[in-house]
Amino acid sequence: MALELPDVFEASGDAPSPRRRNADPLAWIRLCRRGWQLGRTRLLWGSRLYSLGRRSILAGALQVNNPKAVAIGAHVTLGPLFVFGDLDPTGPNPKIIIGDGCTIVSRFQCNAARSVVIGENVLIASNVLITDSDHVVEPGGVPVTRNRRLVTRPVRIGDGCWLGQNVVVVKGVTVGEYSVIGANSVVTRDVPPGSVVAGNPARIIRRL
Image (cartoon, rainbow, N blue to C red; front, side):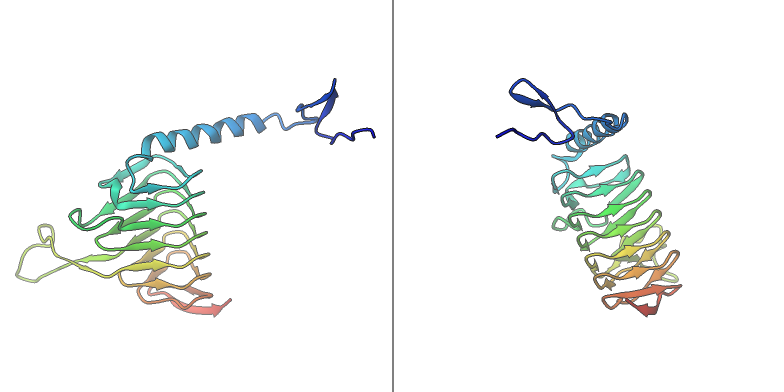
């Protein structure tokens, strides 16, 4: 019986040759670039973070004061100029957890004294801030610039959420899975699963 070769192969003797027909001339460039990004991420962060999942890509950081406070899952893409702030370096790690399959665009900032957990397959646009702590302002007391006290409550972002540009999520908030946070929103209270919220403070606009 004759062997039918797929269109992407050509016969050469007894074995097919893996020469593609009409191949994208930029495909190899993209492939090499991705390989370089994967290798660079593993080299720079693989041993420094609390954990780093396979095939994740991290662009250039702006500031990471304690890499061991950060755990990143597999197949995560994190854009440039990100900031991870460990607000209590003496506390247990990891404090910042990013689940598998997340895509986070540029200038992302996440601060945690206790716990910020981002679920799987979350999309986060640029200039987003997530924090589990607030500073303490005491009239007549220690100036806020020297006051080391923090008010802290854990934050969780559920699986499959989308956070738009310039979103702020503050301490104690849980965003339910498959929710959408509109651009420029400030999320100060829990968001039920499958909700679309927007505004300052963010309010429910509709349910998905």
